[in-house]
Structure formats: structure tokens, C-alpha cells
Image (cartoon, rainbow, N blue to C red; front, top):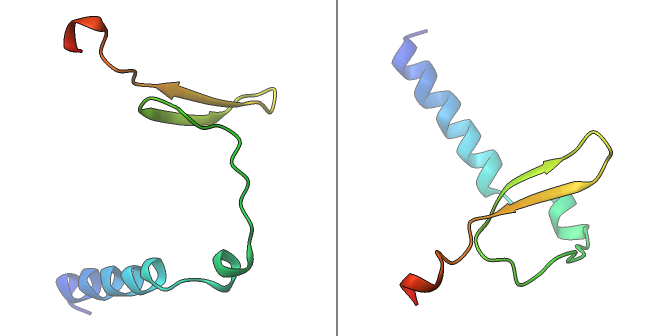
Length: 64
């Protein structure tokens, strides 16, 4: 199989999977555990099982 054709086929298959709503997503309910975050990023579970979120922040008072 041609390498560029193979890459295009894999990309197309991946897009179909990502863009098709799954039965799991449609039947699941979600719970908001944090709100009002300022630029959340760096989501990670720690070794203790706690969920950590790093915030970017607003940039300080000089930009307001």
C-alpha cells in the first residue's frame, strides 16, 4: 500500500471516529466539579488519586 494513501486512509478513519457521536457520549451524564477557572490547562491525576488543574490566570493587574 502506498504510504501517502495509507496515511490518508488512517486520517480519514480517525476523523470518522472522532466526529461521530458515540453511544457512550450520548448516554452518559456529566458532573461539573469546578467552575470559574481562569484559563485551565495541565489537567492531571496525581499519585494520590486527586485531580489537579493548573490555571493560566489573567496576567496580573497591569493588563486590566
